[in-house]
Image: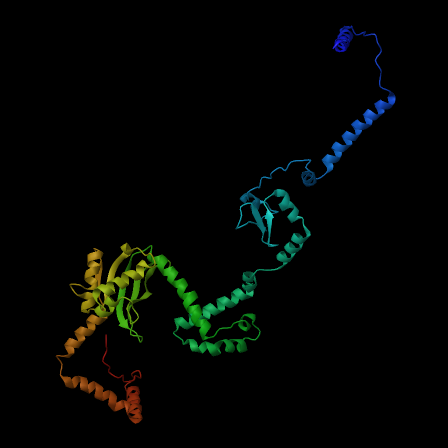
Length: 399
């Protein structure tokens, strides 16, 4: 215990003694300074090496933390860039991906990734191959040259000539070959390939369509009248022929043009009521209006209606004419003059004796059955100094 107290007093005395500042402290040697500077340089070099090391390697070593990359969404403005407009398209499955339609690959929606792909060797090679090739539509599309235009104009004019003069389309199977032999030095004649099938197609799809479009345009701007009559064709389909009469501003006169052959009802008609009712005034009236409504022609331009004098067309009640008057006030209704004259002549002939008609028929039979009598009849006309005529067969006209 005494020893412990003595040691404690000595330590207290030593700590209470003042420190002499004049005592020279030991200084580090030059060799120690060199070692410290080398350690600092090593630390600097290790920091620079750490910066040069790729980030993914430092993440694996645990020297750096993983930074989450924010994906970019596809932007439509990239397609306006001339470098990307020909091949860049959005990906259908993801908004953060893009598609190269030339290389058929998926890309990340980043400008750096797109620029790398544009400058890649694969994309440049594929772009050259695409630019040199043509699409299927362009390959199948016929090349239009000045000669081909002239050939088309010639084919259309020949088809229009046949229609105007009511010539059979079957003649075109030999006519195109005849033109080539007659004009061997003409390039247009050599390139004409026109048979009856192509002639029919040109008439329906070119001339007929253009004329219908022109007619519809005229009827939308001017007043017009309707002339109609119904008939049954060979397929047992009841149809109504519609002819329009209007003032043509281009020609400067009143013209009559065929407009539509509207179907009233037929054997394949799904509406059974029409089939059982037949060609009534209601069905005829609806079929006529439908022909104009299908082409958006204003019915306010309708100012006249003409047809034969049958009861369905011109009856006082429940006819086409009565419905026209009811739906279009102020419309003019005309009965066909030819039908009216025929009815008047038929009624007048009933007042004459029957032998008058028998005389005209027997005169025709007397000359038609003998060539000798026909020759004598011609000589008699020359003796009388009258023009030579042929006796016609009296026929019963059916309206």
